[in-house]
Length: 172
Image (cartoon, rainbow, N blue to C red):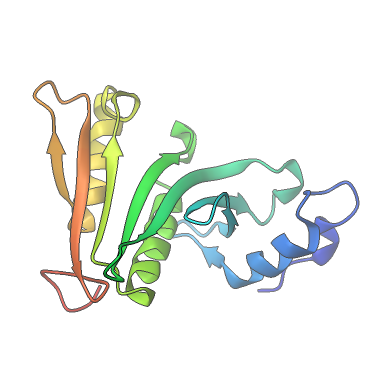
């Protein structure tokens, strides 16, 4: 699929040509058949934002998903990925946007031979029982270890990797 480059000009998105090139690299069709693209924007030399937009509704510039992640290199040369935050509205949940982001993170981990992926879970994610169940199932699908505090309103996720692959599997 090719994107219509006219959607990126004029009064459109501030990144113009850069986002068009990036979008063509990260063009996906979700499990429900939605055409989306992911734009990765560096915020610092280790922190990035991944934004998922609808191809058909791009002019409105509504993000379907906004996620932040850090790629950290240790002194021994090993790479660790930290998922800072994944934000999306309830109406966008279960449409495959989180899966696109997580598949991207897994490919990033493999490419850099990462030793782990981890992140934090907050009260805003865990207080809604439906959201909590969906979130825990999502991370379980990717073999993350999930640790919640005693009252289950915060926690951590952790995935141990060897050469960028989950330790308990050879491939994903």
